Image (cartoon, rainbow, N blue to C red; front, top):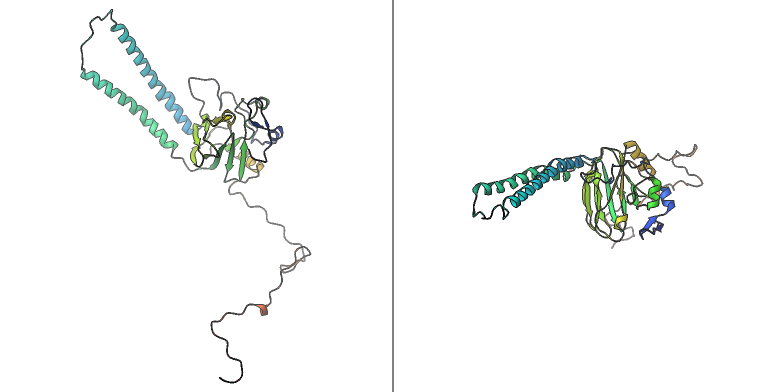
Length: 328
């Protein structure tokens, strides 16, 4: 942990948590509160979290419309075939086994059907992978750095840096947030903006993941991995480190708050940053009346005048004329 950060140990986890003063001084963009079932686990087992990015929505469609029906049909077919073989060819019903060694039709079918299944799965899968690794022009860049055990975030285009720790169970309950997912500093991004996410690590391998964004990427020391997302719905979305990174692996959650453009600009200003393209700082006031350009004051004397006679003479490559009397 950085020297300027003062934390108190959390007896439940054995790790360090932000102090009450640090938690009180954190600035959320809109103080958004989580919505049950949105951006966090809600106990469902039959489907994914609600997706709020274009890539996530395409991936959810691929999962729900292609993969789940395909594996369900295959599993039911194999189960039915197995039951039919067990009943039809049991010893009591079929005492003399068949001696058939070749069946051309059967061999063609069990070769072509798996190929067709793989083609049906491969076409949308390759399309999805292509879109994931061909990001559009980014509107915002965030660098996420994994540490044992917290996250550092940098907004290089805005001059903002954050250090994010997980909150204790008591503080999470007080804020009305889910335990082991709430943090003292949230990542804040504007809605409908393409966010380039650069992920790395300062010590061991971590992994940055937010299920509602369909984002999961490793954080490897000495390596920059890149992904992207564009959230189309304001709200609060949680994630975690998905790589076993040590004894406090479970205590470095991620919270991303998606806000309007105006709220994002206000948040950047509250963190001491500036929006790209914002007007420069105001010029200093003009000098007081009666003080000219070449004049000075008691606290700011005028620069010394340069006399033409003290200027450095031009350098010549000719030798000086002989001024001594007489001849040689």
